[in-house]
Length: 182
Image (cartoon, rainbow, N blue to C red; front, side, top):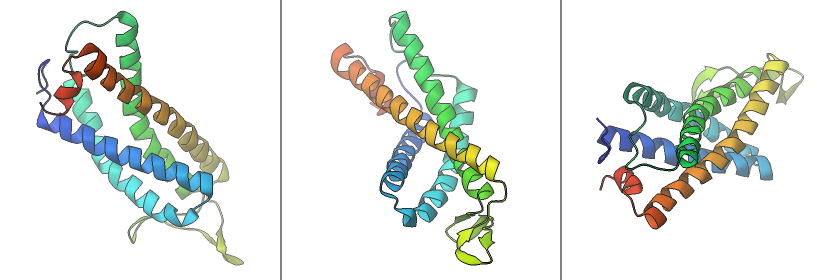
């Protein structure tokens, strides 16, 4: 269990696995969208599905154990900002893979995990390089959600990292050290 002095190995492992995976997938997603590198989509989608398998236990663990107790008292505004940022991160890690799955699946692009088909493609019989959406409206909602939450997540991650560095460098408290297992 997590304490004010130390976080459990499970908490730390789930945090770092999800953090590194989500940051990597966000970076690849921004790269794909900015430079239209569509060849990375199959890998991005497969990893997104696999990361969801780590995100779910992390969310359940956090809901079961609650948020870690702060290492000391902080100003009210700082505590509120931390709470909002943590909720954005936890909800965003769930929304990102689900909205991506909806976007790709409903859009007819299909979702497979390295050959294991999770959602089938719907190729256009007249043009095999194109797909026919199963539901264009749902696909559009999934796409817009995926994109919007991606930007929100990027902002929340920057805030989270800045907060951790503030605690470590300016406050000289144990917040970051606790997440590093020290």
